[in-house]
Length: 106
Ligand code: F3S
Image (tube, rainbow, N blue to C red; front, side):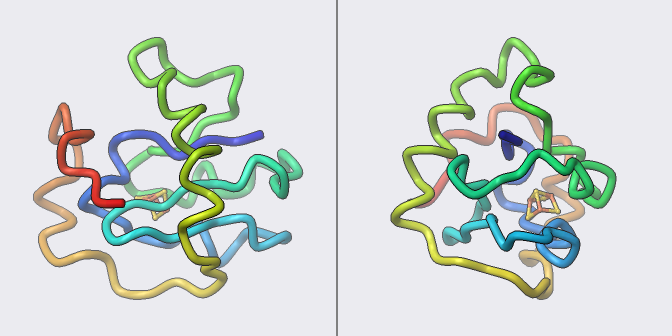
């Protein structure tokens, strides 16, 4: 599967969802996840993310490993999203800010 990691939080650019052939993205208030049961590992979303937040599971950086479980945990509660929308206000200012996990809204 592919995994959305920390830098998506408070950005949520949503460019990723437009290219997903199986609509496997799920949307929370300030973060997206990938449903691991739906993702077909096509990888087309990776270069679309302006925050570089998406990785193949085997490429997830060491300090982001907890996001593998978090994508699986949040997928059933977040809502399906298949069309991009406006990024969150201030997305550009939050892009690259470290330690955003504490800002995750569920
Ligand atoms: Fe998040 Fe990047 Fe998609 S910031 S919403 S994973 S384009």
